[in-house]
Amino acid sequence: MKTLQEWLDWCEQLHPVAIDMGLDRVKTVADRMALKFDCPVITVAGTNGKGSTCAMLEAILLEAGYRTGVYTSPHLVHFEERCRLHGESAKPEQFAQAFAAVEAVRGDVSLTYFEFSTLAILHMMAQSNLDVAILEVGLGGRLDAVNIVDADCAVITSIDIDHTAILGKDRESIGFEKAGIMRAGRPVILSDPVPPQSVLDHAAAIGADLWRFGQDFNFSGDKQQWGWAGRGRRYAGMAYPALRGANQLVNASGVLAALDALRPRIPVTAQAVRNGLAMVELPGRFQIIPGEPVLVLDVAHNPHSVAALAENLDAMGFYPTTHAVFGAMADKDLLPMLQRVNPLIDRWYFTDLPLPRAAKAVDLHQVWTEQNTRKDVTASLHPSPMGALQAAIDAADPTDRIVVFGSFYTVGGVLQDGIPRLQAKHLSP
Image 1 (cartoon, rainbow, N blue to C red):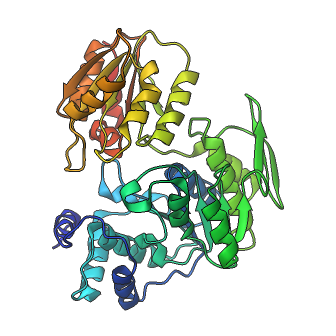
Image 2 (image 1 turned 180 degrees about the horizontal axis):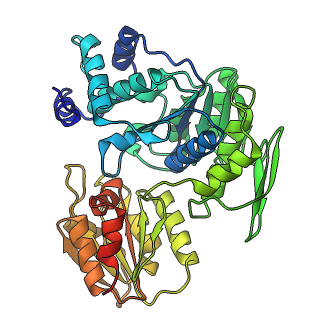
Image 3 (image 1 turned 30 degrees about the horizontal axis):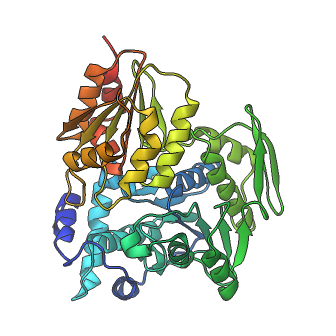
């Protein structure tokens, strides 16, 4: 294998199952690689808000002059999005070299696609002379490949029901899995306002330094500005984060708590905080693309994130007709997702997605039909997200809005051409 794509294709067929939770195999290879970070590591787990939290941490730390490395997953369009070094996506050649470094010591240890790529990205980051590393957990926490690295500060965002076949069927079980990224004596930032008891119990059991939202840090604000207070620091009169949505203040509060906890090692100025939050970007998180009709992109893919999307759509004001392009994984709790947002949607465009785990458009339509009681709503089926979006654009009036949501693959499917071309596609002639 020479190119990144060749490595990715090869990794997909290396292990008998796509998801194989556990750290033994990946830890064995990491030890052979002598994988080690010489800088503070912030690990972020949670059901929703992980990507936003990582993006805000990165933006502030870059503004403060630090050399950052960020690992996030999944990607929207290009695999290279998963690793950013000093604010830029790593190059395909760097990935290919890192994959080769993993393979050179792997021996007979079988690794999943995620495990193999995680080791490669961690290797790249460890070799990049970073001041701080930010790692987003892929799934759960306790048994996720990212957890082979000891976090100097753990951040746990909102916890809700998702991936129940792997993580458990209730918030307590899921919370226990997320809590696995904590380390004894080190800070853990819990930005979920109502955390499961299992998270609190685990923090107490291992002696982690627990920072709780509402107790150790909090925020306040009005329509113009907001403020934050932690254990040893306050910020007042801040502009709202560039990432849209009411839930982003909760995420930003956790970010500021993490930076406060790590202040002795990576101090940041108030100006870096203000500039970072003002300029942070993250595609696909309640991303509004201006035009006629207006276009909203959101990777919301479980009941909790769809509820936040519904609130954010409601706060946008009146639109004559709202069109929705929706594609999702088959293992998601689809009924409450559709029930929550259905009152806001006038025309549905259900789409297939190009992977085996995805629900078919016809199945999404069936679930929607079972809960729909409105007579004034229409629905259609489409083979691809871009095809569904084009149908919505063709049907929409300039004063309408179109929302694309349900999965990273749904949003990624309409971003294949990039934002500029997408803007041109949906602007009315």
